[in-house]
Length: 434
Image 1: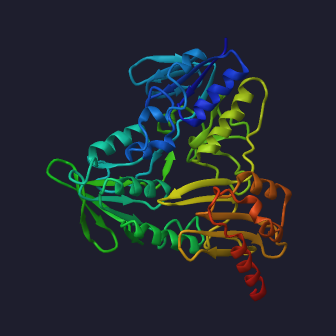
Image 2: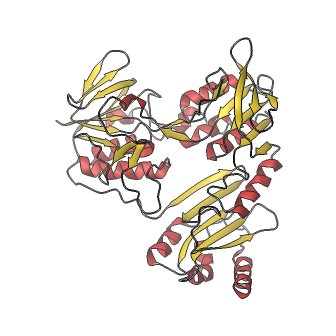
Image 3: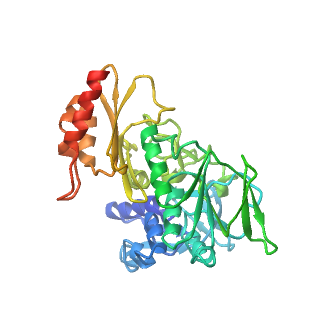
């Protein structure tokens, strides 16, 4: 019986295991140093906020794994020997495989800041990070101020989490406007205002110089690079992005870049070794997608795709049209297709932007200025249907069709106000002045 070993029990690894079991009787072992069982990583914030308990984040009962003949091993893999097809664990034990799936996820970025390894300095990615946060910031008596470094999605999640416990937060964002490498300027400016409205001390255009220690080796303050200001704090959250978790593969002979290099079949340079999820790097980018995508749903799709290949049906990874969603405190965000920021958009990309007067709702529609081909949409505070935009992108609809049929895509609950008429009036007005 072929033994398939999967390192990593996140969404990518577990999806692979589940689909292999649906398709075959292969022996499956899933290895993790983080937790005994799979949990929903995106729900970590809700545990800290008191909305859920850890056991609520596990999609499957603990008996599920034995019932489905998926062996679980808690352990840290120190090295991989692809010639002997063996894994070496930190405790000195080893394991052989016939095929190996690397689904090791990401780790928080560190950029060599002095003091970055002090007690009280942490990221927010793993279950261990959540446990550390309960120690470092259980309340506003123990943690009288937190400083968050890095203005991405994890940073704003951490800010929201801490604010629910009444902990004052200073948010250091390198860019001149929040997430303006991703969002067009109107959206980014709205999110700036929304963050500040939640009593977050948002410092735009601010970089960390160093973290200062107290006499016990704990963080006591940060120094802001631009001004030299020393800001006292009890917690420093490092949320300046993530990088593939691949350090243990440096001597494996597997070709690495920023991540583990893979082809469309998700094969690495080593025979019978595959990589998926946050740690995988496409040798050739797929369309406008980045070679590494640390996104939950792409990890799931890679797992489903790879299971087919491992069970005798070679299948290329084809993620389809880009989409994503997130939440900025009270504002829900969705994106379908491609809407680039002001500094990253091509000359042919035209934007239509509409914002509601309450400053919590807006949309940006991207289209080709010559052909009027619909390229994508960002929505804030207005829910839209993924399947509708996915279909319109596949059909190659123009922006005029999309705008005139926008009501078909609305997914807001009953009794919510609808804004399509206002949006289309503004769109018509923009056309007249263009």
